[in-house]
Image: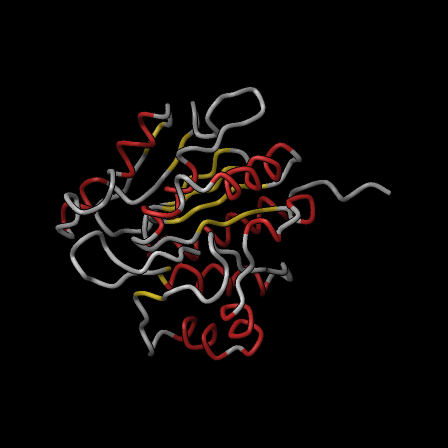
Length: 222
């Protein structure tokens, strides 16, 4: 989850997009998959996009375990990547500022992926993928099919001149094959153990795809 709380110089608040966390979390917990929360600086991350009458968000925000973890998200340096089977980058515009250059988050993701785990991101969360390199020096997304918040969606929100870069374009620069649905419609891509979603409407699908990837993994040996 992002710690960044402003959209550039606009003064508009931002943070992690609650529906993306809540809908994915709902699926993962239903599948018996444990979840910890991490942010670049740790502590309580800013929230954006809260819809109080969304049952999944209501359950998420009223869950005592979630509330405790949200108050005390882990810093990347507190995370042992070998303890985890997946990482999910939750979106929200804030991610565009503090995910791409966070070397520790990128290191965690690359360790998880190269150990056979899954790397997952939704909406603006793929901002965290653009600078992940594997041990062979290649970008994680190079030659891979991905979905993410599109340039057209950014323009439709009037924020194409505010964000530090356009996410779809940056992923293509890194060698990714970017696919998309019409603006703000759900769309999920699964390329092996890389799972990505286009926008908030994709969050449940991302959670379901991640659960399928994890459940398909061979059981641990020993």
